[in-house]
Structures are given as C-alpha cells and as structure tokens.
Length: 231
Length: 398
Image (spheres, rainbow over the protein chains, first blue to last red):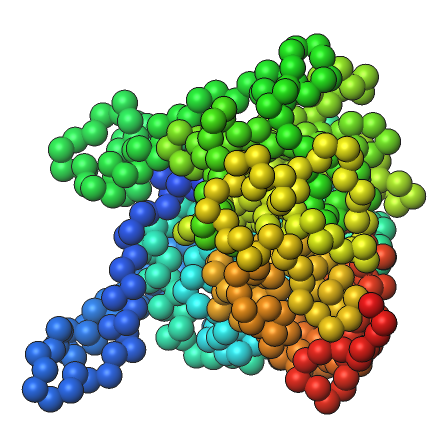
C-alpha cells in the first residue's frame, strides 16, 4: 500500500464514465444522435485485409505494400483509440507494481481472470452502492456482479465475433446487438459515439493483439434478487 | 439525498437504468449541445439548423440530416391515436380490426388484445408471402392486461416508410393511457405470484425484436402463418379468437391482402407430430425475431423462422438446431449443443428458455418469468426426437 492514489484515480475515472451509462438505446437513437456513420465503413476495406495476392495477368486493385501499410495504419489508429479510451483500465487485470497498482500487460485486455476466487461483494451501506475488485475487472452493484470481457482474439475472447457483432454490441449496449445488456461499468453511451471507421480500427487492432486463453465467468445476479426458472 | 437502492426486478438492471435516468439524460443533452454548437466534428456535425460550413457537408452528412427530421408528433393520449371511435369512449373505431396470432408471444402471463387499422381504401401487398408490405399509415396496437389494462403498444408506418414504436401506460382507472417516454417505464404492475413487476420497454428494446430491415416490415404477429385458419390447438397459451377477429381468409376475401399466393391460404408448421408442430410454432413466435437467416444474428446460423413460402418447411429450422454446437455452454461442459435429440437436459435451447438468469435467459428481454407451459412442451418435443435421426420426431397420433 505504498501508493494507492493511482488506483483510486482509475476507479474514480471508471465510475465517472459509468455514471453516464445505461441510457436506453436503439439504432434509431444512434442515427438520430448522429453517432452512426452511414456508409462510412466500406466492406471492401475489410476484404483488403484478407485478400490473397492478385492472380497473374489481372491488374491488382492495390499494391500489397499499400494494403500492408493501410492495415498497419488502421491497427495503429485502433491502438491509439484503445489506449485513449481507457479500455485497459478495466479489461486488463491490475496488479500491484513498484509504483502502485498498474495494468498487468502480460494479460493485456484479457478481461477478468478466469480462476480468480472472489468472496461475495460487500453489502451496500447507504449511498455506497458500488464496489470493485483490486484487479479492476470485477464490479458489484445493484445489477449484480459484472466481469470484464476478454477482448483478445482467442476463442475464449472476441475470436468468434465478426466486426458486425462488435459494432452492434457497442451501438446497442446489448450482446451481439440483441442479447443481454452489457453491464456497468462499461461506458456504452460514450463508446456509442465512435464512428464505423473508428470501431473498425478498434476491432482490427483487437484482432492483432496476442490471444490470451481466459474464459471470463458469466455475470452474477444481485444477491438479494429472486430468480425464477430452472436456470 | 435520495439513495438509489437495488430492486429485485430484472435482476436489478432495469431499476439501475431508472436510477441513472437523470445522469443519462444529462449525457445525451451534453452530446446534443456539443453537436449543435458544431463543437464535434464527424457524424452529426451537420444537424439541421446548425451552423454547417461548406467543408463539413458531405452526402452522408446530408443523409443523416434527413434522418434527423422530426416525424409527426406522437399523440399524448392513446385515445387520440385512432384506436377508439371517439375520445372518452372505449368503443373501437369502425375501421379498426382485431386479430389473434395462433402462436402468441409469451409476456409473463399478460393477456393481450391486438388491433390493426389500414388507411381507407388501402391494402397489404402479400405477393411476397413472408414479407408483406404494409401501406403508409398502417397502425397496430397491442393492449397488455395484468388484472387491469396496463399498457398499449403502438406500431405505425410513417410517410417516409419507416416504422415508429411507442407505448401508452393506462391510468389505474382504465380511463385513458398516456404516452410513455422513449426510455420506457419500470414496475408498472405486479406479475402474479412472482414478486416481480411488469416493465414497459424502451423504444430501443422494441427494435431489438422488431428488427425488420430489407424487404421485411418489423411486424411479427401479423403474418400468414400467425393468421392461418388452420390454427394449432396445441399452441401454448393459444387464444380463441373473439367474434369478428380477422384471419388470413378474411384478409383475402375483404381485399385487404392482395397478391398473396392462392395455394398458401392454410399455412401450418410442417411437422410429423402435434408436439413438434406446437414446439416449432412456439419457437418461431418467441425466438425468430432475432434468430433467423436474414437479420443481424444471421451468422449464428440459428434459424427458428417458419416461412410459408419455403418448400423446405421445418427441415431448415431443424437443420440449424439439432446436434449443432452452441456458443453458449451448459454448466461444466466444454461443448454444448443447441438441441440434443432425446435429451432436453443436455439441450441449450431447453436450458436457456427455462432460465431467467441474466446471462442465460432466452429471450434476453421482455420476460422475467419462465413460460412453464412452453418449457414443458419443448422438453416433450426434444425427448421425443429420435437420438440418431437427423431430424423428425417419433410419430404420435395427431
């Protein structure tokens, strides 16, 4: 505990972002708010990323070197967006380092550690209703307990996700755009404002980072909340 | 200081949405203010009426500006939406038609009544039997009751061809219903014997199921299969249509549906046994809004949609579920399958529709209470499926 200030700064930042979240959303809303960039993402640009070299005798639409440079530029842009949008604050587990808490970059963006044993979260007292684990990857509040997702390209992370899956999730605040809500403290109302190009750059960067096998647990319902059914 | 507290409803999530409503509204307001001041480049910079410089105008921005043009105002009261003959009356307007889908969506036991009103002299284009085209001005209403009228949802086709969703919350006396904000309203009525409450969904959540897109209108319960005169007596929570309710035959004979193929006037879910027919019909009505071959989740290749114009019938649906690996894994399993013939307890479909845990439940929204009747029906269907058959069930006496 020689220097815990950075830790609290991180938590405060995350909470400030989170306080702005959970606004009901829709694709229409996003369009009306101007956050959906109509037609800004060109599927052809995605095809370029996986294009085989052009066959002999046919004119190449772009030079391989150009493709490579374009991809590198997109990865760099995505990396910049990830680093300036606080993704590592919650999706990379934190550890105690020489200068205090810091993200464990050997597990970069791999989400809440699979095997980490956690006791039940503390009970809310008065207005203190949110608590976070020291890793910054598990959060308890009125919604239950949420665990940050593995964003690496491993099959336990975003591996099976298409760009469309990723984009729809960020835009709607629901898994794959249709499923359960993405829970606090993920600042969906902030990230909804990314353009298609920005989301594609982020997605491309996330496909380029080292895959980390880490199956993040499912969120837990509120301890006091009744559940129904067999599940 | 008012302290937000956890609520048991919707696993706390919905209540939390409510608690943060003010903060969220602040965020939205700030974002809009920044955009209208031209303080943010990129999307939205070209808001109509704002200071748009020549350099910021692009085709895409103009397209967005059109999308931002406000549609006609939604009436504040349900009685002004055209459902009733006159304000203060609960008598339906003479042009309003009632219908009853044969496979109702499970809504936690709420009873529902559904209405349609087409512009005078207009008709629905049914030439594409699974993608009817509704005229501009078409209006649908769905009234939910839980001991009393609770809410009435509306769906309306606007002059620009888009669809608008809204909901009206009834007053306790049942006199009239008032427009609900677009973020919905929580805890409007208790759900029987559960300790939980019915929530009115946000308009964003409406679109989650009522996806539409492409050739398809975002209308789910008003289709050839749902209105077929060959009704499924085993459909969970199937309703007996009240006198005068509209079915497919009426639609055609009254000229309200034109171009519909004459050979498809009695569509039904193709199945070798009643249990399978009812189960597939239920899964169509409750799951195919998202799980179909054309929507945003098409790449999951999970398709519960029954298409009356598809000669493959139920084979396509069964192909997508039987013995197919699921992304979801059952507890303590490394690999799970959507439906394991003969094994309901090993089938992800059965597990998820029988759960109301946040990360497990299906559907993921719109229901807090398991549909026990349907869970029993689907379990019976899976149990009947032959273990080694690619699809199909043991025969039973129809």
